Image (cartoon, rainbow, N blue to C red; front, side, top):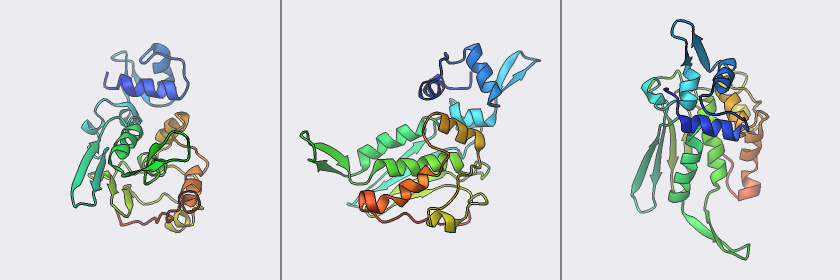
Length: 224
């Protein structure tokens, strides 16, 4: 009962599973994924920490650090802030909707029907946020993922240093090999097609100059 039906249904739908949320068959599948444990004493399923992070109604009750703090600095000196603290499978879409509201837009007239498009490609920020959600160190107590949008740059902070064999040098060269600190979270996001486990994210960042006429991203580690 501590898991969100909305989050579970999103996982079922996007991973193309044919279950009802909290059906016995689905609960058994989550148990096989080590996301639930069955208690013989109470004859009930208990969520693991990963299940609470991924699907919990209130994940921050157990993991106060499990949030994305977003802030935008507008060109007129004003700022706006938002906190995303739902089950982490829900956060990428929530942030994408927020970005569409706060990023300045231009008119794309390449088609018959003109469309407003954000001045910065939302899919690139989405890729960075998904990587942060999947690969951050959730054991770093008190440190949250941070997203800051400035007029001239976008900053994403993800707690935890790179997991060996990944290095900052490899990230900046876009040659880092796929390796996840949080294997269960990575598996669920892969099943939902939020991410690949084949360095596609590195290709996305490497192509920013060619595809979007933007500078290449810079990776740094500040000790947190």
